[in-house]
Amino acid sequence: MLVAPSILSADFGKLNVEIKDICKCGADKLHIDVMDGHFVPNLTFGPAVIKSVAKISTKPLDIHLMVQNNTFFVDLFAPLKPKYISFHIEEEKHPHRLLQKIRDLGIKPAIVLNPSTPPESVEFLLDNLDMVLLMSVNPGFGGQKFIPSVLEKAKRLKDLLLRKNSKALIEVDGGVNDKNVLDLKNAGVDIVVAGSYVFGSSDYKKAIESLKV
Image (tube, rainbow, N blue to C red; front, side):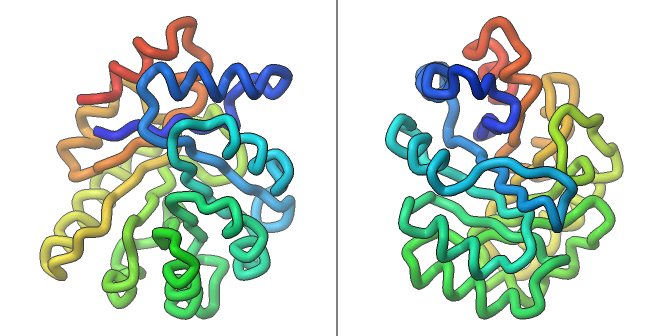
């Protein structure tokens, strides 16, 4: 299992230290939640902050857009050359076009599904996807409880990927901890995003290692 700590749960007062520590403690990539106050009722990081994170981090960036006007934000963050940019299918009228745009920018494209959005909604986009991110909480805030029905959803998505011979990875974000990570792995999940579980721990290395099942 790959682990992507979400810096939404980091201590912003010492963010540079947090980034260095999390990279040293076994993180595979950094998950960055970009919220615009419209698609979700919260605001997070702008390009100046993420540019600083990119300079400090020794791990690739995984930018998760929770925004309206996805194309605007893709153009805003593409110069930082993250490994992934993901956007919510619920908010995009032309997902195929945007996926191709992200790939043309040299970035791996990904789509995010809210807890109530069925995995079959990406069936005709799989040829253009490198990753599908399943939200296991409702987007907008950290520290929420895991929604168990996402396990069945992950299994359905994995079956779909196998039937379509797709190599897209499955990532899950929200309420992930050492109690549910094995169930996620057994459901076919490749990457877990963990915010409060990692940054709320007194030992980042131990917390990350407990998720690498």
